Structure formats: structure tokens, C-alpha cells
Length: 489
Image 1: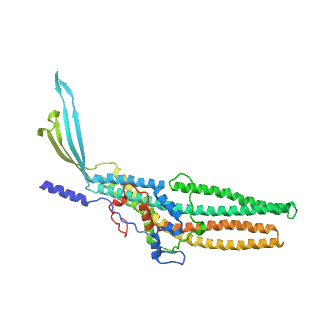
Image 2: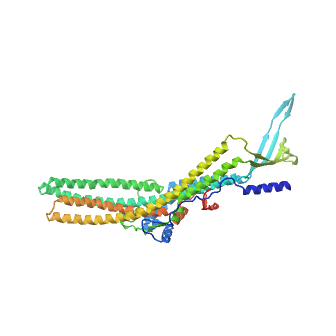
Image 3: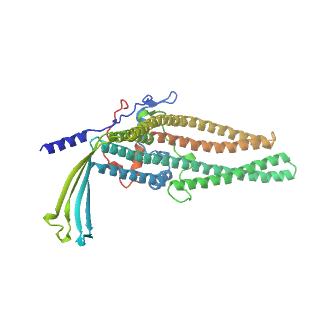
């Protein structure tokens, strides 16, 4: 009874003891509860609701929704990330198995003959056995290893979520660029057609001597400039379609279109964001899991300073006559244990601890950096959205003014008040302004995508759930202990 009591007390002690620092979330200097851009702000509730919205549906283009839905299911980068989650799931299972005894079954047979002083002896031995090995986790080494493995797994899942975030944003931005190129190509073709007619007419007038060589040469120059934009835009369209096809997990090919770039709906977006939204970003969560893993591995290494206790046992049958192998007289068993403690390692363990602590410091600073980067990205996205809207408005006003200038210059030319060079100048500015205005429209749409990407709220949770999944879902894992937020150890 004393022996049993001693073993039970030992096991209770093993369960309660863990070497190494417990994880505490590092204190991070967080701005006010709302991220401001200059002097404007809105209620947090709108931003929180927007963070949970499937944002690509707000643009009013079913083709965009189709492309993103396809990409999150078929994109190969997402599939690679899902397979990596499976890899870490397997490693986590390997670490969990160390909690339990290991059992092995063995069957062996040996037949031989020996000669001693001219007398031959048969030397046969047959064995059937079941052996067990169990390392008692006295100092929490196995517990810390499992803590690190779980953090590695959750970090891999955050990488997968981060890739999903990137792919959805990249699909949307590429699609807006594609619609912009379509409209620019249409403008270029229309301009070339108009200039070709003017050039044909002016060549007849030049042959009659009504206009100078200067005017006809200038018109030819503008014609060929506009014409050179067509193959440039067509090349860009094909290349962008091929890039989107790869994002969809397909071979290069054409991409369907929905709305025109001018017909897309610009979602209403708050001009400020609650700081709490940034804590949901995959890059921040991944960095914290990496810190948790590095912190736990300090305990794994520090446990090497202390003795390790292992229990072994064996039961089975052994006999030199296989016919009598399973008779009661052949039954064998043994049980034992070993306690192994380091005496002299020439600084090996202390160096491993030093290395683990250095890795933990790297993960600590990387976590701080990721939080700071998240705030920077969010602020930049807000500024991008606001200033791009101002640029788009200015480009629209400029286009209106140049259109008026072009119409007036045509009227002045027809009345003989000016030369055609003024019309050409107005036409050149109008062409460039039309292209620039379309590009500004696409940039404005992409600035909205940047806001949604910085939110990384409920929409990402939903999309990650609907995307290509790892074979073993991470949702079945136990929830890790929630860290404290009042300091770092």
C-alpha cells in the first residue's frame, strides 16, 4: 500500500508541475479605442458590422462574387496552406501521444546448434511478448512540448486564413483593374476611330493646300499615339486574365465580366476603425501563436536539467520448444523503472536554454512589430480611401473642364478663330484625362478593398470556413488557455 501511495503521489506531482515560464500576452501600446484619420470619425458599431460583412457582395457584381467564391475553393496557395495545417495537425498528434504509455508486441524465434566438448546441443528459443514504456512527465516537458505543438498548429491555421485574406483582396483588385483596362481599351479604340476619320479628311485638305504640313503631321502623331495604346492595353488585359486564372486554380484563359467599372457600387465605409478589429488579423494572431510556441519550448529545454523517470514492463511467453510456448510454465513478466539525471554536459543544456530564450525574444519583438504593422496598415488604408476619393473627385472635375475645352476649341476652329493645333491639344488632353479618370475609379474601388482587408473580421471567419479545408479540421481542437493581458514573463 505504501508503494501504491507513493506512485499515486508521484503522478499527482507530475500533473501539477511545469518547468519554464507561463505565457503572458505582452503589453502593447495601443492607440485610442478608435483609429482616427485627421479630424473625422464615426460610430464603432458601423465598422464592427462592416467587418462581419461579405464585402465583395457590396460592389453589386455577381461575377466578382463568383470569382472570389471559386478562388477560395480552388486556389492552390490556399490548398498548400491547408495541407500545411494537416502537417502540423499530425505533429500535434505525435506530441500528444507522449502523454500515454507505449505498447509494443513482439514475436521472435531462434533456432541453432552449438558444440561443447564434442557434444552437440540444440539452442532454440521462442518468445511472444507485450512490452510497455512510459515516461512520466514529472517536470512538464511533455506538457510544454504539446503547448508548443498546439501553438504551431494554430499559427499554421492563421497563415491559411491570411492567405485567404490576400487571395480575396488580390482577386477583387485584379478584377477592378481588368474592368478598368476594358474601359480604357474602349476609349482608345473610339479615339483611334475618330482620329482616323479626321486624318483622312485632313489629308484631302492638305492635298488641296488648305492646311499646312505642320497640322497634318501633328494629327498623324496623335493618331499613332492613340493606336499604340490599343496593343498595350490588349496585352495587359490578356496578362491580367491569365494571372486571375492562376488565382482561380485554373490554366490561363479568359475571365468573364459583369458590370462596367463605372457601374460598380462604391460601398459606404467608415472613416475610422475600432482598434479591437486589428486583434483579429491573421498576421497578429499568427505572431502571437509563434510567441506562445517559443515560450513553451523554453520549458521543454529547461526540463533537461532535471531527472527523467521512465517505467517499463513486459509480459509474454518464452520457451525453447515452440509446442510448449503457451503453457503456464512458459509465462514470463518483468517490470522496472529508470531515473536518469544529467551530471556533466559541458554546457550543452545551458546553451540550449540560451538559444530557446533568444528565439522567444525574437518572437516577442516580431509580435510587437506585427501589432504596430497592423495599426500602420489600418491607418494607411483609411488615408488611402479618403485621399483617393478626393483625387477621383478632382479627376472628374478635370475631365469636365477638358471636355468643355475640347468642345469650345472645335467651335473656334470651325469659326476660323484658331488653328487645328488647339483642337489637337484639347483632344490629347481629353484622351489622357479619360484614361486617368477610369484608372482613378479602379483605384477608388481598390482603396475600399484595402479597408476591408485591414478589418479581417467575421467575413474572414465565414470565408475560411467555406474555403478549401484541411483534412483534419482545427475546430475540433481544445481551446488554448486564454492568456493574461497585464504583462510578460
